[in-house]
Length: 217
Image (cartoon, rainbow, N blue to C red; front, side, top):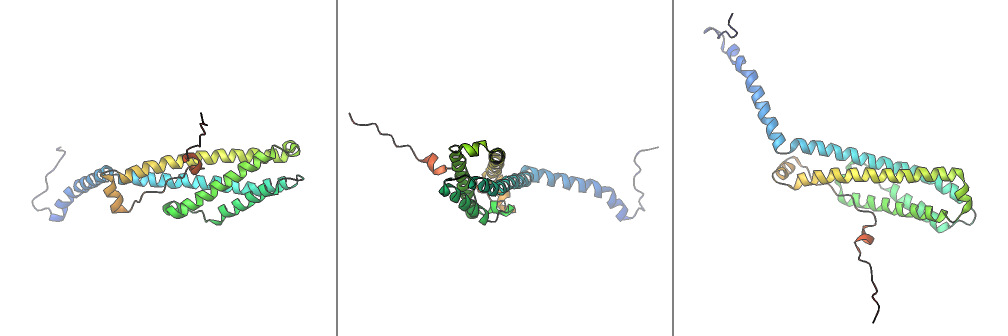
């Protein structure tokens, strides 16, 4: 029996057209898929989702740190003659950091993103100062509850660093795609704007050259 039977001359035109419809549909789909892949559309989709996921993890760790701070402050307050100024700076820095609504859309607003990261950087600095000062108080060093909080806080800071690095790498790949030819044309057509980079903590201090006094001869 032949594997292919030609359509009878009396076969309706609609039936004959259906013979070619499926191959033609597959061909069009294949060409469209190749074009989307070649122009970077699929890569934009992937990196956009990865950057959102990475940013969500950054926010999760920031929130975890924020939740730990009240317990840390309450424990430190119990230490007699503890530096009130140091505690005040931590409380104020936390208030500034939490006053900015942290949403996934924040990464698409460079100005708001910069303010948010600046506030989080100030909070990191205030906490670092607080933990350094506690070294001068033997009672706190011997307080198991405080030490447990300290371990949790330091672990969260490490997770923040890991999450930030993942976000930085993902955004870098996304921005290279958005600015390179020919994928930059795809970015313009579909509205894939470059994402704001993650600022470096203490960037001002890092970029400022140290003052060196060579003395006089």
